[in-house]
Image (tube, rainbow, N blue to C red; front, side, top):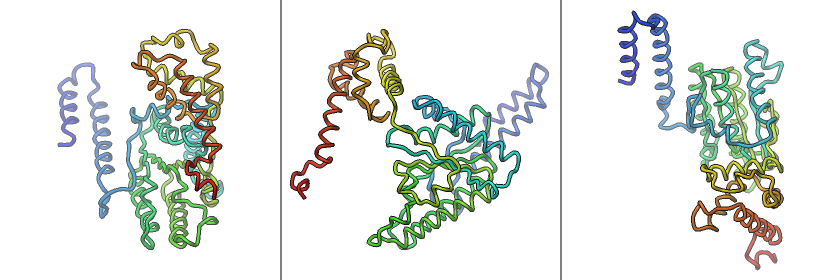
Length: 351
């Protein structure tokens, strides 16, 4: 029943075979689509012996991921380098070079402050690459926070199970991207592990992660890992060095802040009733807004526009002056947090 749509399609092709269709070619294409549908059905089914997976699976290209690439505003060089990295891996795979001699782990690490687009870029990159290069692929988004366990040996067991499931997906032969967001949660720097927690279990967990990563890379040349972190110093050195390519995604500069604010306002004002959008972004208010928002992440900038809506009765009443006022309030809040250390309990502050 799963492929009934395909059966109808091939019947139509056969009935019209005397027309403009090349029916032999269409049947070949149909067979390929049915095979791909079978792959999808098999990959979406839970692995034998496991009730659930430790990751979410998407088939690429996926239009729902387009925005994760399109609307993340960073320096153009960052996106170019990421795309080029995947091209390099593809080229090396075709040449069948030795992964050992090049020390390849087919892994990229995105690091930088929170809210700057690392996770979105890591999700959007494989989708954009698959779309541009016309490649079929799958994206596995690992829920890293579900892996640590309070039980003795639990973390190690969870990691080994996870990588076994990942290997089962990669065995289908599709290009397989594995996204591990906030990788420090399972790749903790072993040099900083406290003896007061559960050091052996954490150590064994990191060891299991490293061994499983290396095993997957050896067994599946069609697998690429994408790691993100806000705290590169918290990642174990052995994991950091396994990333073939590390890239900083910094806070937005003046030009990027202007573009992010403009993009957010345009989304709210699609009919362009806002005078400032019609006049461009060169007014004194725009300059003031860009100056006030120095040091904010892309996420904070977009939230700022939403916060400005609380200053008006109707969204249609929003003006750039309201966003400037919201930015002033945000600046005052940040200054107060700096002075208090982010703690409002005076007794605690005096300790």
